[in-house]
Image (tube, rainbow, N blue to C red; front, side, top):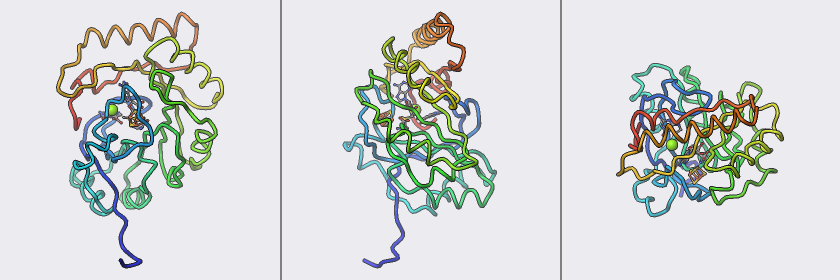
Length: 241
Ligand SMILES: C[S@@+](CC[C@H](N)C(=O)[O-])C[C@H]1O[C@@H](n2cnc3c(N)ncnc32)[C@H](O)[C@@H]1O
Ligand SMILES: Nc1nc2[nH]cc(C(=O)O)c2c(=O)[nH]1
Ligand code: SF4
Ligand SMILES: [Mg+2]
């Protein structure tokens, strides 16, 4: 094996342009690069096809240049925001892809749970940290989360986005928010209907959003922005949108 072998990444899917459906960049046109593999197993994960090793055969090994070519092709060479998601994108080296994109005027955002600080976080325009609440079955290691916040660069906007399924999750969000007063905060209701083969009940989705808005306002908690998953409202659990 030659020493200068080009590193490949495990990629579950590259799709778009679509709109960013969640959090601080909601509504913004974006191309998604979804990496394969995750160090977590959230009970309600809506992207299991990029997490569970049973889907590994669907992931492609791609070089940074191949990933960048696909982003350019999908975006028609028009600079936009590229959203790096997964799985946990932080377990792979996306630095070379970001370098290629930024040289062409593209911006980069990343969605991660905040369990692994990647050196390339410092290159990002937006770092969305989504610590997992109790309903996920995962437990946050806050020292690692701190490391992720610190890995951001001087030009990186760092925000926190928390998924809420129940009142225990809401209490978790309040405590997490209090520990990070400097981070803009986004709350989104959890979607329990994650089977891509089944339709999402939009009335139920609206009720979950109303429940979370009511809870937040009743607590006179005026810091977070409470948002739906806009892509779920439009396309349900369809993949690649
Ligand atoms: C699939 S994850 C991938 C990135 C990273 N692993 C993470 O969790 O932040 C992308 C976003 O979707 C959120 N998410 C996953 N499953 C969800 C569900 N069932 N309902 C609402 N949000 C969900 C995650 O919390 C995260 O903010
Ligand atoms: N449109 C759209 N918005 C999203 N925001 C976060 C997503 C994700 O799965 O990381 C996602 C996604 O898969 N599609
Ligand atoms: S951390 Fe993200 S990708 Fe991994 S299992 Fe949880 S929601 Fe899914
Ligand atoms: Mg998603």
